[in-house]
Amino acid sequence: MVRILAGLTLALTLGACQTGGSPVTVASQNANPGAPAATAQAVNAGDTRIAKEVFGYLSTASVQRSEAIGGFARGCQAGAVRLPETGPTWQAMRLSRNRNWAQPITVEFVQDLSRFAATLPGWEGLYVGDMSQPRGGPMLSGHQSHQTGLDVDIWLRAPHRLDLPPEARESISSTSLRRAEGAYVNDQWTPQHMDLMRAAASDPRVARIFVFPGAKTWMCENATGDRSWLRKIRPWWGHHYHFHVRLSCPPGMAGCVDQDPPPPGDGCNEAREWVDRILNPPPPDPNAPSPAPSRELTMADLPAQCHDVAAN
Image (tube, rainbow, N blue to C red; front, side, top):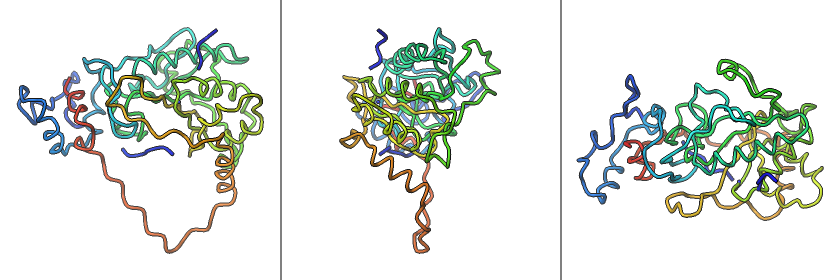
C-alpha cells in the first residue's frame, strides 16, 4: 500500500544577479571568510540587504547537508533537492519560476501523495505548484511562506495527462473550486478532492493543510469514520485553486522552527465561523487605524545560518 500517512505565521537578496548566476558571497561583502564562526551573528545583525533580493536570484541549491532553517516565513533551506519536472504520477508546473526545490522529505511526500492520487477515479496523479526556491528564503513575488523547503502547493485540478511540454505548464491554469467568495464549493468539487486531502492530512509528516473555508466545511459535513485528520485542515484566504501542505520539521533539525500545533478538535466550528464572516461581513469600523505598511525582511532578520546558505 502506498505510504500516505502537515494560525499561519506570516512575514516576508540583490546579493548578486549576474550573467551565469554567480552570487556575490556574504563572505566577500561582509567579513573575512576565515573569521571565527562566533562572528557570524554579528555579521548577520549588520546586514541590511533585502533578503528576497538575495535568495530570489540564486538558481541552484547550496552545497551543504540538507536542512530546513528558521521558520516558514523567516528562514531558508540548505542542501535542497529538486522535484523532477515529470514523474510517473506527477508534473511540476510553472517551471520558469524555479520553485520545485525542497527538503528531501518534502519531495518524498509529494511522490508518495501523487501515487495515491493516481488511484483516485479521474486522476492520473498530481500537478504540483510552488514548493520553494533553490535555497528557500523570501521570494521576489507571491508567497510569504515557502521559505524552508517544507511547503508545497498541490493543484486542485485533476490531471488527465502527465506529458505536458514546458510551455503548456506555463499557460494551463488550475481549477477554482469555490463559490460565493469561498463560502461554498462549486460544481467542480468532487469527493475525490476530500479523499486526496484526507490522505495528505493523515500522513504523520504533515503539520497542516490550508484550503478555502467552503472546502473545509464541506468535508466537515461529509466525512465519516475517523475524523481526526480534519484537525490539520485549516481554512485560509485564497487557496481555492490549490491546497497548501506544510510539513513538520524533520527530526534532528535543531535550527528548524515549527508552528504551534493546531487547536484541539476537528476545527469545524472555526471553519463555519469563517463562512459566516464571508456571508455576513462585519461593517467597517470608521475608527480602525490604517494598517501599518509591511517592512521588507532583510538578511539581518533571518537566522545567521542563512548567510552561509546564500554563500555556499
